[in-house]
Length: 281
Image (cartoon, rainbow, N blue to C red; front, side, top):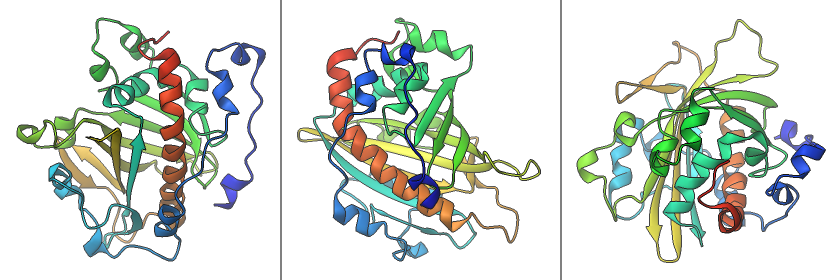
């Protein structure tokens, strides 16, 4: 992750320093569990038989956990796969829903999540009033909205359009969509373009699923990425041309980025929510 290690935090402007959440930008929190980092090591790629195929995502609704909840690897068709699980004590479903409606409203809110590797976010002009509208239920605010994210997951600056969908649009069995099977969900599909990518190279697709269940004293956050896939009419679709593979460095970089950003969010979210939860402007 050499590109990421060279990045330095961008100083806050006077306007940003005046924001009530600016103090979180430089706040330090405990790092990730070393055992989790070890499971995501460069030389511990998962074989495909230990991956959850995108067609089988409804297995996330089964009780308990799957055989492999942490790991990364390359699928036989050239796609990349990432599995991650975090236990988040002190975090609630209500906090998660609020966070994904609150943070895309202003770029600094995304940057406090994981500085200096989260660089900014914005939504389309039509979506801003939806996020701010008190009549829109908090759980519905993020769905069908595109987050235009700028971040560094180890390959340099990337510009990513994340299309957030309802669980039904992603392909989940809604007859099983209830507690304790699931607490809440954040996910959809995205397109990524590296800042230094030649214009003739198309944007890279990926499916993202954050599947959250309640546990004693907090939530269990289970993540899956299928890089090289998108969602069409509720079904996963591989988009890699024959012979093309997702770069392993990109898969490994995102896998490790995920460890650190959600470890930080575990500590950050309860603090931000205690001060600002339920507000948006």
